[in-house]
Amino acid sequence: MGGGSGVRWGQAQRNLVGWPESTPMQLEKPIVLEDALSDLPEVVNGEKREEMQYVKGPLTKFQRYIRSFNCDMFVSGAHVPKDSQQKLYDHRPRALDDDNYLRVLQIPKRKGANFRDLPGVIVGSDNVARLDPTKERVLLPSGNPLVLDCVLTYEHGKCLRPYGRLWWDEVVGTVLTCPNVRMQALIHPAQDRLLTIRESARLQGFPDNFRFCGTVRDRYRQIGNAVAVPVGRALGYALAMAYLNKNGGDLMVLPPEFAFPHDVQGLSSPNNLQNGNI
Image 1: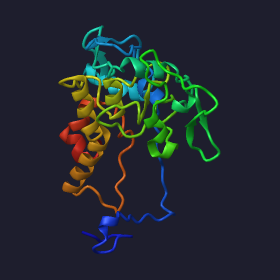
Image 2: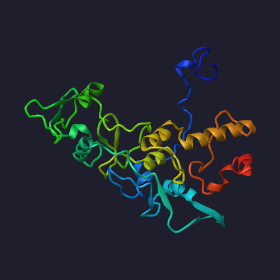
Image 3: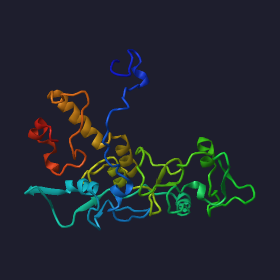
Image 4: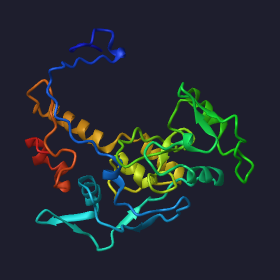
């Protein structure tokens, strides 16, 4: 496979993509953590409820869209709740064990906080985290160390992800299949817990009415293994346009408001598809 600007025959495995610097770009404003999660109710580390009520309305465009699938839309295109008490599902985190919970409690609630903020850790001029040799190592009630050896050696002590607290203005990275606070930045900005199943699902673009099956671990895995819903929609749209020969140029551009269409029910309408209005 090969061909196209910037790709030589037989060298496609190098993933070279030609992109002229003069190509105009109009990038949408990125969706940050606050845009995605700020309307969700508080839950604790040991939350076990499978469903609960929303405690506030949607606060952002993303939240209105992701929650609109819980609505009937047959009244002049308006979003009319199916009932006045919509249910929120899967809003529970993988529970931290006692030691990890005590560690998370000591991670400051500020942007960029991680294991380096724990007592007894120093960072040298080489940006390597180490235990402070002048201080006695802090132990937890279990007798295990507060600062684990594995986080000090992970990526040669230069990694900032272990016990990392996410922040509201950040674009979250890849949603993985197994939340591991020792290697990933997964702590909620304002609550001492990992991101919940529902929060992870939202970051992958799953609407709130989509329910997952199995154990907590199974549900995280389903989300992490999935192609992000908006990516799937964009790919499906591009394939449909190619099939219908609707793309007349070299560069396909998604329609305006593609990410958050107002008429959710009309997403799969044949008329919208054939007219390129999805």
